[in-house]
Image 1: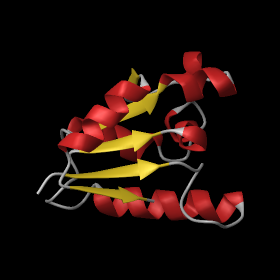
Image 2: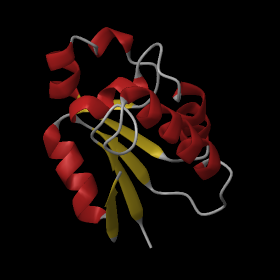
Image 3: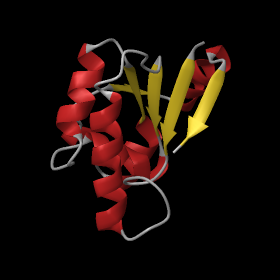
Image 4: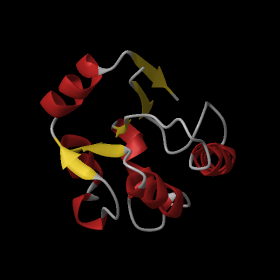
Amino acid sequence: MKTMYTFTRNGLGDAPEGLRQALAVKFLSLLAQEEQLPAAILFYTEGVKLVVEGSPVINWLEMLQGKGVELIICSTCLEYFGLKDQVRVGKIAGMPDIIAAMQTADKVVAL
């Protein structure tokens, strides 16, 4: 089964930013240790803040990318937040690429 995850926040859940980021670190570190990995992780809206300099999850995302997980980042969102030159991991893509990725998935999980 081809699964994809989406990050639309700077972390996980609806909580204060520190807790959202701590949960994202925990989630991604545990995910990186799993045998069954998602095909891709998509980042849009505030989720793009997880792939830039200073993000607490960069190391885990680099590890997941090294294991073959595609990391797709919304270019419009990066431009909106002024972060395009700070991306440390993943592939910058347009919304058509994000839609195409979702359409190839058996399951898309919003985090």
